[in-house]
Image (cartoon, rainbow over the protein chains, first blue to last red):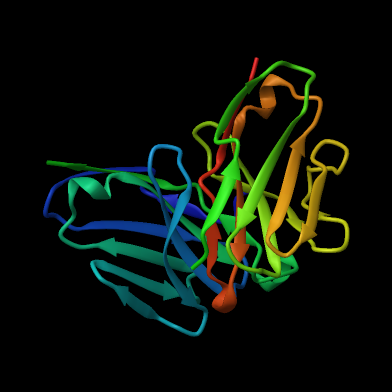
Length: 114
Length: 113
């Protein structure tokens, strides 16, 4: 079963707007990673945040992590049509046997309208 | 990061047959994983491919259905055996590098008729 739940399930915005996606998880984690998937292709690694970090930036991406609430958010600023994709969070949990084994959330389908 | 290739990229197979998917990495990695993504769903971990020993399977997945080989640190195969339409999915391999970042292959899109 999925450890993470993401909301919203689908998000539609205009180009230039910011997009925020949220991820909640259930167990203690070692790390949380965000991925992008275009049209059922392979996953592209976006960013990793460790359990002892609260915020991380990469280009137009900003990720926050609140371990007390077991939640994370991904913010994409100044969105572009090319950002249209499915976004997944994935957690590495020591309780799963290895922090390298990832448990994926349900995903958010982002559509950026030109 | 790592460059990961998978073969085949897609296939259409008959019920009851088997398909072997290959995963090749451009560098030696300790941990390789196989995931399944059913249509419209998220990814589910099938197993961890261990070099030199049997794969470690997740709950709901068994070796007879999904045998895995890992002959060296750059290559692994996943076989989907005795296929049924319910096995129609995208199958992805991934590798875990230092710092826990995980990188995925392009996936194999399997359709079982």
